[in-house]
Length: 213
Image (tube, one colour):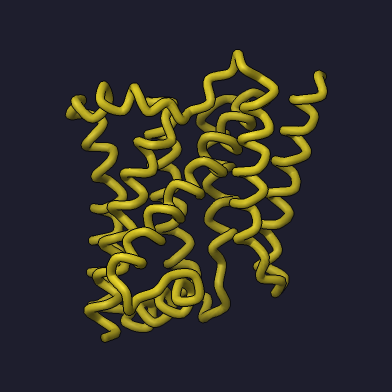
């Protein structure tokens, strides 16, 4: 195993451990994104042969494909279903999401909010799809890779609350993560999965803002 591959493997382990920290009350799971981005660029620097998943030039090619837009829209559809069901049957879920996200985004400034959502979506897609998923897929087949990546990604969003609300939250995060993983696998481009992630997050924040404020 070459040194670059060994470093990437260590990064996968570190990201997993950090993501699980929320489960034991140590709220540092967000650092997994920083770790992923850092090692993504380290890997990019030392392995020029490996496509990095951030090729801007191919974006135009994929956005012209109707099937990709169906995948891009799926997380938005899932969020609409998630929040509609929550509004009808589990209103406490909206408060849960608000409390889980308010420390990283500014609800009171629209321009700042949009910028934060874009940066967060891109950061997570670089860390979890362009780095974690791509590196893990070198060891195991793509389907278990996407599933395992999504499990770890979802648990990294764990926040204390009632079992029903937390489980409901994690399930929908997992589903969307799987979709982002499929989009990245189909395009090998984190910009495309970021577009999907950003659109879904914007809807969620709009819904929360209307519901809470």
